[in-house]
Length: 133
Image (cartoon, rainbow, N blue to C red; front, side, top):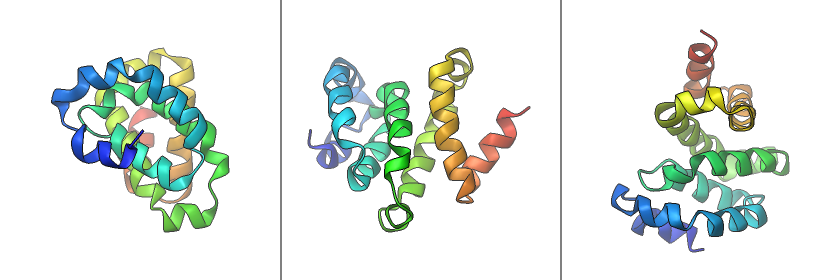
């Protein structure tokens, strides 16, 4: 999928339509590869871009399914906290209404948010406090 190079080449919002058309391909790719921390990190950062954010509902579900596959070492060495924090920030910014109306999306989002809160992520803690209102 070239996910690492996609960050540089396709992350601009002008490519959002192209990325959206590629959603089925990205979904198949994530089902196979986001269990690997380094690829999950790159994919998470991609989801937090203007173009990549069109995949965010699907991407959050896939990342949430893979949460148990990451070790504490993965969280530290692959900077998953920073990458996943970027995802929850973009999700809250762009999909706040959809999050609350889609139980599957909301459950996956909360799984990632809670994992980040357990690791003391300030962005996640602020979003959790705001979402509880």
